[in-house]
Image 1: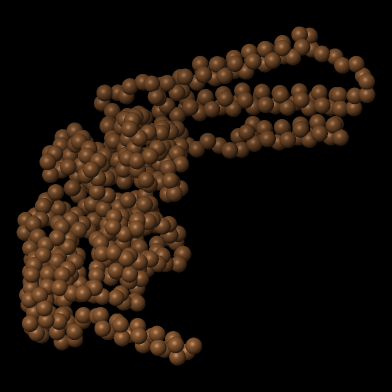
Image 2 (image 1 turned 60 degrees about the horizontal axis):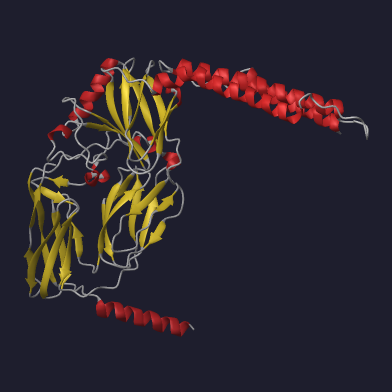
Amino acid sequence: MGKLFAVVLVIIALASAYPIATRMYVMPEDISTHGHAIDDQLSDTMKEAGFSFLGAQLVLAFFVFKFAQRKEGAKLTHLPGGAKLVVTVAFIIVGAEVFALGVLGQKAWANVYFTPPRPDALQIQAQAGQFAFYFRYAGVDGKFGAIHPDKIDEGNQNFFGLDPANDIESRDDIVSGELAIPVNREVHLLMHAKDVGHSFYVRELRIQQDFVPGLDLSVHFTATKIGRYEIVCTQLCGLGHYNMKAYLNVMGQDDFEKWMKQKASEL
Amino acid sequence: MRTKHLFLAGVAILAAVATTSAVPGGGTVSGKVTYEGTPAKQKPIDMSKEPSCAKLYATPPTTETVVTGPSNALVNVVVYISAGLPDEPPPSQSAVLTQKGCRYLPHVLAFQVNQPLEILNEDQTSHNIHPLAKINREWNKSQPPGTPPIVDKYDKMEFIPVKCNVHPWMHGTFAVLKNSHYAISAEDGGFKLPNLPAGKYTVTAYHESYGEQTQEVTLTGSETKSVNFVFKARPY
């Protein structure tokens, strides 16, 4: 019975490693300048975790197989140093592994999250609320009008609470339900939540950033491929969470300018 | 058993006749609702998040917070008798709100206190209807496509903004009124409140963005009295 268990263990370990090792599940297309670093990091993590997993399972199976039918009263042998040494070694190995992932991974993470955007990055404000995203562009004056939460009037498309009657800067602000951006230009997304926690996730951009109520967060990225991609909320935010999405529309510079003009004409 | 039912039905009919204030051939209040000034430009609604609704429109529909007609007509104004009439029992016929193309049809739905209200979903997507009642009980209910109508009623008079928790641009108004003498101003701003018994009345006009106006009117017989309302429009 013990030997059968060892064999089944090996089969399960190899079968679960197979689809990953043969890259049966490919990553979605990467359309960002930083995405390759994330992909490399994921690949490294997968390799390291995969080899450790397989190694641990095979060692376990080997011992189970070898000692499954140990005779009653047979002499037990211990590793020198006993349990204390084994735990210490394991602790050092796992610690080194986690530390190495952190050190190696920082180039994928910190380059996106801990560096400032270029000064000429296109600033777009993103607001998440139950259960939709809205995006605001500063308009021709290059300034965002102030936000007044008491003036939010969704039925009148005033999702940000602008006060165009008194605030001239807000009159040319463009508000859109889709995130239109020019290709190959850095975008600096200024994020705030209207109500509860939400998350901005575009898998092709390799960007995932939470919205936290009360905090102004930001993220910056450059899209490199024209197309239409889905933005989804990945933080459970209420009953309509499943339907909280928007589209990222990456356009050529000319098309983007046309789009802005069209939106401005609707004001 | 049968006679008891018939008896109860008879009593109900008598009670309804006794309390209803509609007088066929009675007086009529009619008029027109207009605006002066520049009303806010209505904005195109961005439905890109919900492709099943967006594809129903060749050009995006616009918001309906201020709907105007030719020669400064103001549409979607609820005109009703706010004083001078007794409260009336509700009709048994349902008031129906339809969710279609991710909009509320009609945009303003008037009905009586305790009248059955039916809400239909004709879209291929789920809605979560949320009437923002303050005097009545507030609720919100999810309605996936193909599910039966939501049936409810309101037991107090109130103007209730209605929104959808899934589609933030969806917006409508419930006008819950105490009697059957109400009208909603049409494309030309016109309204008509017929079959009123002789008496002194307060006529109120309610607009979701511009608020309320009232006027007094006295009817002595079967004449038609003209009452017009002019609202001040604001560009923002």
